[in-house]
Image 1 (cartoon, helix red, strand yellow):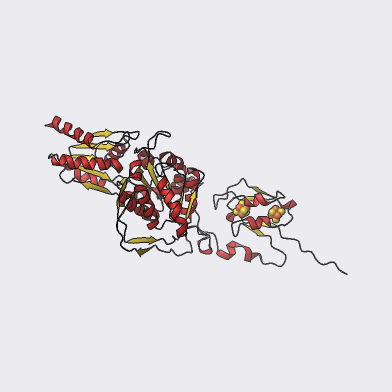
Image 2: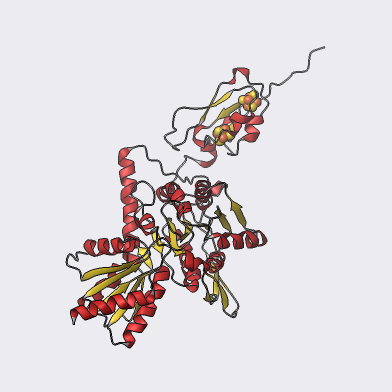
Length: 469
Ligand code: SF4
Ligand code: SF4
């Protein structure tokens, strides 16, 4: 009697271009047949695994462990059709520039009219994010931003969303990289020391064109500093978003209402340009309670064509910031610079208060702008021609709104809670606009949590007026 044929269990083989080098297969193989390779795959920029199957018993655990549908496959058995297992045969040559998927556009959904809320700035931003369609929030708690994350942790699970407290800010930004790469609106609440830790990841997001919103409630520095308000991160947000030629739109709300409105805008801009957006609040603004009117529309987000969504139609997409060829990386940089130029041309925003006839202009943003506004009102009652120029975008600096005012302006007073970080942006914008003889620029500055006071600003400007007269 002949022995029944024992068919050998199939051993694995790997499609290197579909292996992301996650190492899960390495962990499960008790026969140590799998190791991480040493060569970067030029098609993906990733390092695929290498198989040495001499000891392989065909248990199949590695194939089960592989999260990539076509990473590890069973080897073809005699009589089986290899072509059917070949992703190149199933999907055609792998391309990243021409995805199959049709984009699903965002939808606007009507909201009923409601009475205004009286809430903290951090809560207003959290509500703005939810109304913008954000259901994914990651973060590491840090005062004075924590209330926003707390509210999200309570509400998002009830809205089929996710709040995850990451192990660190470095983990947070990299989770956002993955979430934004899937085309989902995501956000973090953080504060200055945490924002510093996220900068490398923000550079990766910019390089890979991944959207995401960073809400930085700035506090006193350097180092751990304190938890009081300081405009300590203007230079980081405008000039220091990690390595490389990086930029992101930087929005600067000044009231709880703007915390909501600008957070909604941030998501729109982040997806419009496929780039992170930074919102700079400060410790007072996050904690400040104010009247907030909800919009009459909210966003149901769609799905962009480029999303790495994990289904057949999106499989050709790739989120990656590595360009090993020097020329390709220069071309990618040129493309990004073009995008920054578009942002600079289209997204400058400023709020002008009594600027039309102003001879003295105060430039201020976030909470110090509130003190400056009070000072303008007080000085106007004394007949002083003073106005407040409040940049709502710190990058791009709204120079196109400032230039027309300079015909009348004799003096600019920069009021800020940092040692010249806002003034540097102003001076750079003037110089880049070809204004080499600007009006006299003075300043009222504090730091460490001390804010410029209204009477201090008034006295400074009155003293200057007396000197002139
Ligand atoms: S089939 Fe089993 S033994 Fe073979 S490589 Fe995979 S995990 Fe290791
Ligand atoms: S589990 Fe799949 S994707 Fe991860 S390293 Fe192994 S083959 Fe590659």
